[in-house]
Length: 172
Image (cartoon, rainbow, N blue to C red):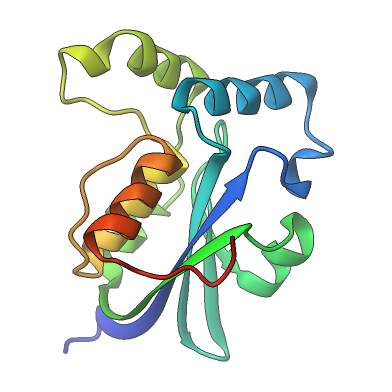
C-alpha cells in the first residue's frame, strides 16, 4: 500500500424524511425533502458514509444540496444531525484517499436545479447524473474498491447494498 491508500471501515448511513436533522431546516428545504420522498417512493431521503481508520480518525461525509461536500468528525456531525436511521456496515476497505480528496476539496456541490432536471428530464435519455449525497457516497465506495452503480437517490443505493451484497443493517 502506498501513502495514499489505507485500510478503513466503511459504514453507509441512511436518513428518513422524518429524521431530526430536518427539524430546523427552512421551509424550502423541508419541501425539497418531501419531494424526494414522493419521487423516489421511499422514506429514505439522505445518505452519508462513515470512514473509520482508528479511534482518532473517524470521519463522516457531509453532503447536502447547496453546500460543498466535506469529511467531518463523525462525533461532531452526529451531535449536530443525529445518528442515521439505518446503517449498513460495509466492513474493511482499502480506500484510495487521493480519489476521496478530489470529492471533498470544496468543488463537489449539487444544486436543486440540476437534480430536478435529472428527475424530470435527463434521466430518460442521458447518462449524466447530478451531484447528490448519494452520488458522492457511490464515488467514495468505488474509491474503496466496492463496486456499486452510480445512483442519484438514497433508496436506489440502499436497494443495491441490501440486494447485491446482502448486507444486514444494524438499525431500521
